[in-house]
Length: 297
Length: 260
Image (cartoon, rainbow over all chains, first blue to last red; front, side):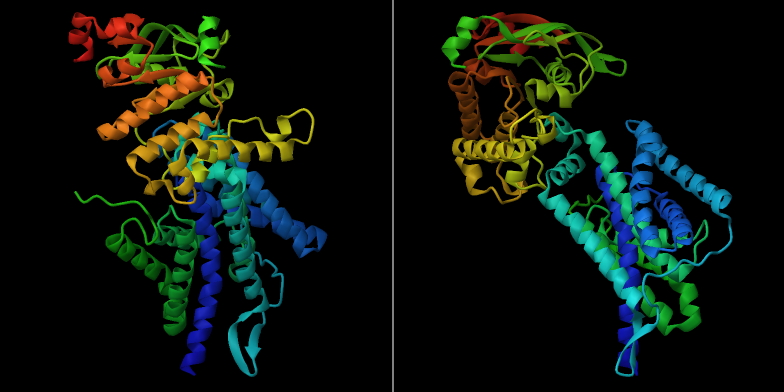
């Protein structure tokens, strides 16, 4: 039935859209603070997911792996910022970009050395059997519901922390105007480290949520990163709300493409994502939710 | 401290000695020494490129001085970070875009209290509650002094007029509880009537609160009208330093360096 099919594709799109939104948010967090695109974000997420899988296999507990992955994301984000990103501050912007690409290659290489290059399956927290209403399949499982809830709760918690806590205000002030923030006594460098740590957390979350659907291997997050990046650009790179909306729009659009075009559609998703990116950039170069004004030249 | 008490004190609140600073190969300050009397307004004047803004930036730590000392109550702050310097008691209001337009008026003001000692750094008592009450009281005081801000506390700072924005950045700087306030062109881009109000505010902060103010102004005439002391910079060096009236009545100096 076309309506049921449409609903299934939409719900499935929302699930993947939330994962893209998590990656997009992690990119936005860093972009807002430093005007730097972290190309290593996918690599970091892949690495923390490997850490999670090791913990799951050793302890037998999915949740131990889940929590360790998030903690590892926080630590990895902070360590990367302190060790390789901070020295590139006050240098030409390209330096930091190249460092993040180097970091990606390093993390993917290390993952191959430590964990091997073969495809590994990652467990899901809940059943991946499709839910039904009566006899009608919804196209989503309990685990998919968990994916949406986990990203939603994390996003709302982060939004509340930014809005209502002193550290949140410090981070926003540092991101919007580093000069004023420093002159007001805010340790901007520390805020950037916290930003990277939170970005690491979001990336790690995306990693453990997407891996049951994609398998885990050293390059497994590359495509997810590209979709997350597309979502962030659609949303405007500067806007957390835009990142979430961009993620959902992209997830749903790609789900329709894959769903309605069958096996051809699955092959086309990357191309369609690129097409959407180009169209958005042509119509609204600063994304759908950016406050920045464009100057025509 | 009242102004009368401040005048009895006699010692400068801020003394800059032999400051050398610049950008890359350019030396913008070449051995500048000034002293700002406690509770007084010291105007720093000069043409574009004289080094006025660089002087404030070097004092507040935005650029690192190559040589020289920045003395606040005897402590040398030269080379410290802006975060440390505002904590030591020097607040810098830079020229131009001083408000953070993406934040509300109240959030902008709360940013001004970020230099206060944190809960963890307090030794005793029930710091968290005291601190919260203290912050609320300080905000109320700011709203009491700057009524238009109180009415717009939940609005984004982007919605404020030019005069209100200047009011907001000065209010924010005062919330750091400074001993010395560095103001860089506070009248820049303001209508004459608003500019007069800002200058009135500067005078009141000095006269009523005993705040030491270093005022950088392109408009030398209006700066000297409110200042106690003036320093004229040219190409990174001090070419004159005297009380404001003396400078304002020196025709040759006005003609050469002050443009009026």
